[in-house]
Image 1 (tube, rainbow, N blue to C red):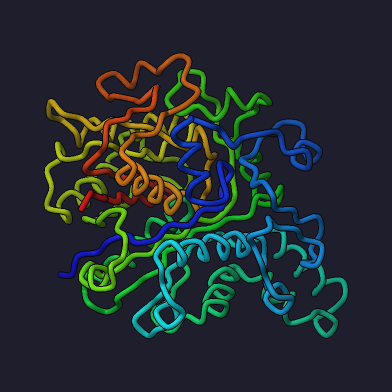
Image 2: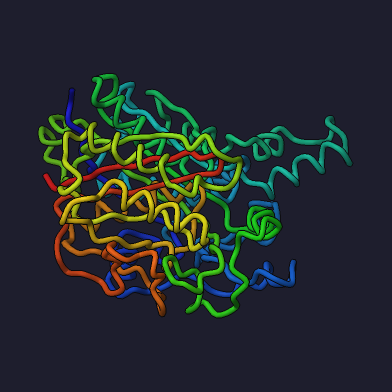
Length: 418
């Protein structure tokens, strides 16, 4: 089995639009949550979002969209773009530069792309409205493409001329973690030399308000109070958008071209709850099995994990299920330090796995463990689990990242220093 390493990172997020800004925000515990005016105007309960600064999408016409100066698109590219594809493309551009990949390597049969998004609910609505009100004959082909659930995959493979394996993943909030584990397997098996892994989501009322209907989102209007995973007064999660991209590479290939390495992908595991469409199994046994499978895949004992980036979204059911899983897996004297960076970034849905995997790679490379912010009263259920209520400047040698999605999909990823 080939070893797999991470050689490039790219971020468009609520806490920064490049790797350096994200790193600084994590070190300083800087939060990207704020009141989103258009969200507040659309409902009387949910006001906060992990907004992506510097990007505006005031209408469905891409010519009205604005971006930070370093983000560039041609008019032809924008015709089929949706907001999450804009975020993802910008993150992937940064990851390519960060990994120092030349165009021939990007567009090689030995380079593939696995990506994850729920699609653009807003642009799907616009496309369907056009078909139903104006008629199919008067609805343009680009409008139809923007309405497809896999529009992210279509746009990225075309823009970057991907020649290798490419798939769009959809397993709710575990999607981009599934993408990363599956991409690593392709490299381990020798089927690809390089894989891009990208997660992205819109940050728009159309993909936020359905979760408000489920009563899953915090009703706080003060961003210092939400989301707060592991706090006894938590009241739900806050949604964010953006994009995160990782370059996974065959370790020998990376060494031969002198690539900088963030971390090694040591292993991954997955398991399902088989319990409910939305609610997690309170026992946490599905996530526990995913973590155990990841440890077995990596040939590591549970005591080897120094830091764990929890899925913890700040719902009581989800946090408690994960705490039960952690207590079942980490039974020895040494348990990993734990934080949920969603307190800073918000919950990226399909984006979350890739974003938090990138954060784990930064933690390993830069030598720190990020805070689990906003905790005022730690839930007594956390007893025995070392939750990081302050940033730690201890360098983790091995880090695990957990993701769980509706339907009981669970993924655990393990990264290590090389």
